[in-house]
Image 1: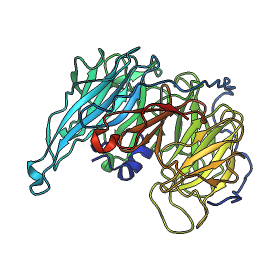
Image 2 (image 1 turned 90 degrees about the vertical axis):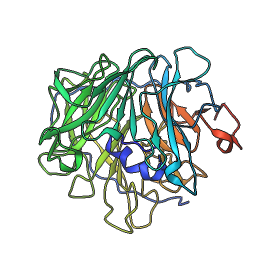
Image 3 (image 1 turned 30 degrees about the horizontal axis):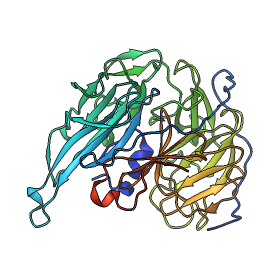
Length: 415
């Protein structure tokens, strides 16, 4: 299944996901960068617990993609059951379903998908957004232009058709809302033709998009994280309006006000985006963009920044060089207690215990990591998923494995 995620870093790893040891390496600490806008807002403490237990359901049809969860433990995932004919690919087809985990249920169920069956040569092009308990939105990109959406408020039993047009404004981001972007200039243009984007909120009430009334000053292409971090903060990355360098903004009042901080970037330009994640001991900001040294690679990470005051000031802990690893990032960093942080790169995983100054290579850890309402989710193809809240303990579950996917797996487990 091919997807078009909302946030830019996810789009960068689609090719890697195919959805159709260096100890003692030293980074480059830099002076902290002061915040440039907004009132001071001390962050609340982050108290993290053991990972939730998600039931496995390896026998669901097809393959599972993009599991999403609500804070009550309910969840959704896209399923694509594809039949292929190598001698005549045009005879193949993909039949979509939606896997649904109701709150408190002990198993997932496959329910009807609003997406149409497609030819095997076309695949399925869709994206799934979580919008709270029993609520989700499917964006159907097979219908471009005028992308269709499908909204459910009853756990996938019924779906209502909509579209991605933005209607009106909202003063804040409601609970269970999703932060995204659309094209503000020229209005309604596809991403490749867009000159300026704006922040929009996908409503958990009706699945419609509304422009956020107050937005941070981050240039023409702000890149929001779709969900809040465990401390309730919302993050957007972009360009510092004074210098053009990479910057991030944080809101601790659901988007009513924002505080912008410039990052001590090693580059003059803003790069592609910055992936921000809040841990129990620090906030990490992975600056993504072209590398100044060495061969360019997919999902390249310029630098890793760290803040111990909730994002008011930042220190550059790691600067990517010509050969030093990690040089790339797939998804989000995984913060742990103290100075522990892990990086899933394109070809290996890396761990630091000093806040990102030095890294050692891991035996695994290349799986794509993203934020859910229940914790950080690690997706390991073809059907294995793991979730964590503290960056140390992981709970595993299986979804829609198929015969070859289930081989060699050991079911549920906590690491």
